[in-house]
Amino acid sequence: MLPVIVTDKPDQYVGDLKQDQFTVYDNGRKVAVEFFSTEDTPVTVGLVIDASSSVRKKVGDIIAASAAFARFSNPDDELFAVYFNDNVQDALPERGMLLASDAAGLHQALQALVPEGRTSLYDGLIHALDRLASGTRTRKALVLISDGGDNASTATLDQVLAKARASDAAIYTIGVYDDYDLDKNPGVLQSIAKSTGGERFLPRSAGPLLAACQHIAREIRSGYTIGYTPPDRDGAFHRIRVEVAHDSKRKLTAKTRPGYFASRQPGEPR
Image 1 (cartoon, rainbow, N blue to C red):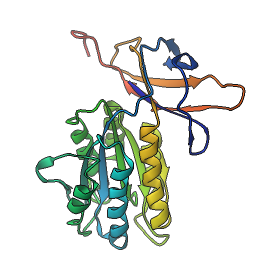
Image 2: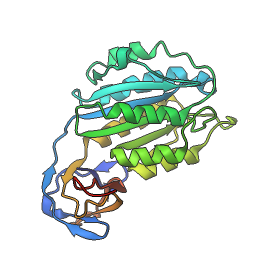
Image 3: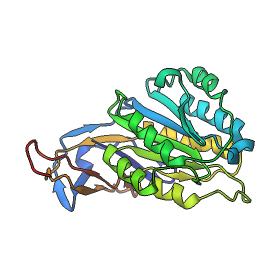
């Protein structure tokens, strides 16, 4: 299943296309589209929030933007939140999830967040990807809010990217930092987003931060879902390309994740 976003200009989503306007390539081979939907289907989304000392001055804006993201989302989306500093913790009790319609509940849970300590960003993402697996929605995504630095994780960036590709989750990243922040690493935020079919945002103040959350929520809700059967069950990474036919009035651009790991057929050797 592929989440596909189509635009005809920046921030202008196109939602009136038909199945026969899409062509999907798997490792360069054209495949038949077997499932197609334009519905605003609920997703499972994890908010992954930096709670280290480096974001202390921005924590209020981060909490407000996280709650706003829930309000902009499909009310039936499943949400959970984790935060990281020296350790990784679940923001909701007992590793729980809530519906996006309960934005007030999310805001209340995040109020307990106290920025302190170092930054275990990679460990936070690994934990969040594990949490995504317990979600009941077919489509899944993470929203990372951080300065991009990491000085406390046992996991590596390569491990995060490999696990993200295996999960088929899109990761959106929001860089929150000041110019003098020595821990900032916008390059890491770009790498994580680009490698998973997400997008990176670098808001400079509270207003653009809120706008970034709204943009991400709208993008998740505005997409198509396309399904096909992988041509090979070889356990390897398959690269995906989705093309959309232009019409006479607009030039269309399709975006999806760059690829996936194809599962092996039962009984095949590794």
